Image (cartoon, rainbow, N blue to C red; front, side, top):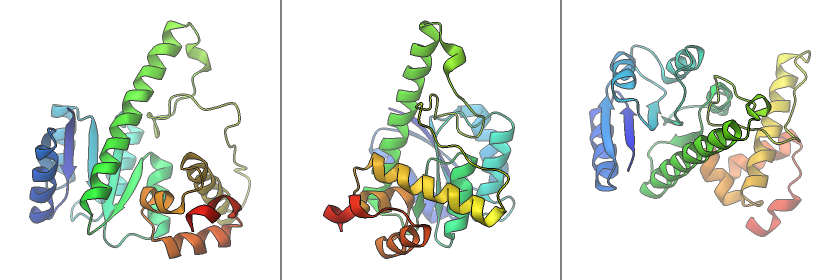
Length: 220
């Protein structure tokens, strides 16, 4: 199976996630803070990381940004928090986090997020090998902040960086939610699970951003 690193300052959560993932056949390492996570990241080279946002020494978003800046974000990272805002979740996604899980984390959401993370890592690795083998490595679009997104489609979203911050953030969020709606075939339930939002909050956010909700009628 996979090597998974769990980073959380709460002993109960670390133990619970260890037991669940270990029962699923994964090799699990745990870290209680950012310092231990750095050491485990270098020693174990995990296939996936579950990273808490609120920690006493260095918060999870800062650690995520540190890994991205150092080129160490070559594994899927799933953020966890019981108090994070939509802005925090969006910032983590922008940096390179693949998903966000809201505490208390249900077993179904945990296993689904882990399964999707490992599947995307596997697909990204296969795509990178295919591109290299075909001699078209220069056509692959990679970024240190999002190494799992190896190749972007020709219709990838571009952003106007000259916009005021608020407008630029709205532009990103709109593209973010439209992407996930398309990936989940308009299922609001699956988009809510993937983005870590409650359905009512998700509906309000989509309407606020002016996202076309016609594709979600069957899932409402």
